[in-house]
Length: 346
Image (tube, rainbow, N blue to C red; front, side, top):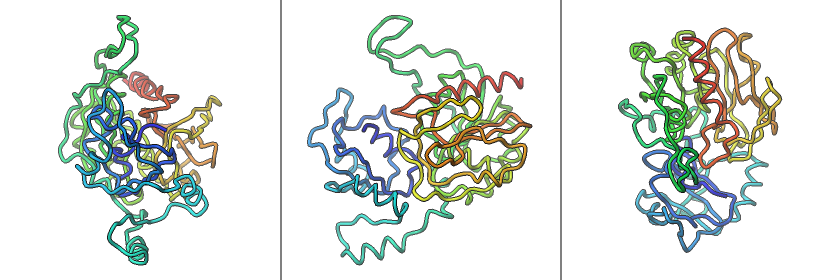
């Protein structure tokens, strides 16, 4: 219903055409504060109806203006709910958006496009150079509980722990949430060696979300394997799958993936159910994991793995997005669990 700008700028959608099921899109425009990265990453955008008016006090441009600026093709007038049913029956598939090709030429172009299996999009989206996260990270609240002021930023406490965050396609709101939870974050390129990370002597290591096939990242698996047991590690989404490979496990492609902000997940340790935001097309094979790796969370729709932890080393990860922007925020407690894990291992 909301969040189209966050979807467009989520690096995990690199190389994909995205269809929105909510019929009216573009009604609140586009603004810099809601971007999840420096640029949009979708290859195309499919919607039911484009709002003729962009009305919001933070809006800086309309969706068509934004698409024109970044040379992204979009199409409206599509029955996106019927399209969703089609994809849920037959699975995600390659496709083509065009204003130039004939119907058969468009079909041929879609069939000739690379499959998602084996695709490494991480190298396209990772930061070329490492950097410290210093951008605005305070959470906007209607009323600041400390001051009672309306429409203000919440207070941001001091950074207590220094961590290194691997950028496999990291979302800005992950970095904001990490800073809010007391972390000083040093972001590094996806192909940074374990030795270079350990040379920074961080208190912990974070593995981010990202696009493409996790099985195609063999060089990254090796470096992360070298870090296991050396520092506390927390992974999200692709970071969860990379950890699975680093532990010796395998991943497989889902039929149509998990998308959107209404995915139910069960914590097997507590029985607690969370409604989560997800965006991934691959999953961990639980039978491939070694005995010391415990499955901690499952998806209640299809029973796939949504979280793992090591019973031997201070390492855990989840497949979904606890930092979800625009929400839900049921799982935001994981950032504090990471802080607790670091504190316990100090």
